[in-house]
Length: 115
Image 1 (tube, rainbow, N blue to C red):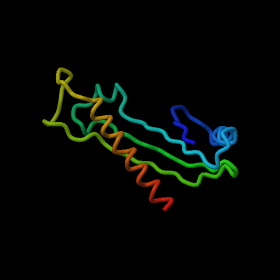
Image 2: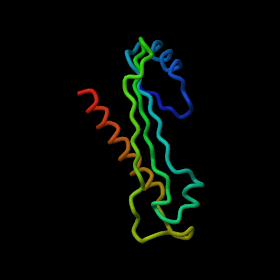
Image 3: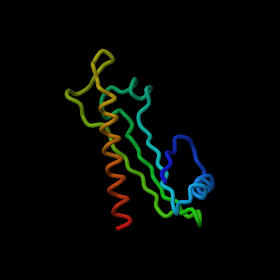
């Protein structure tokens, strides 16, 4: 079972949910990225905070965290050296691409951890 950590979720709550679902372990993940304020204040792509994908696996029976990983990706450099509020900047595409790279790296790391 996988649970998105949109809010703060305690490990005990995850264990209870896992028990109700009848699963052996639960994957929890959280994806954080630039806020609207961050994007408004950024003058260049490198001013944007990174996208961070945090994941962990908790065994339901013991409540033990058996895997914990943090992946950080940044927005790719845009054409040109900067932007202004009047520019047509595709923040959604940049964010989506950074999230996609972060999720792919997370899955790759998870696969390697449990080979």
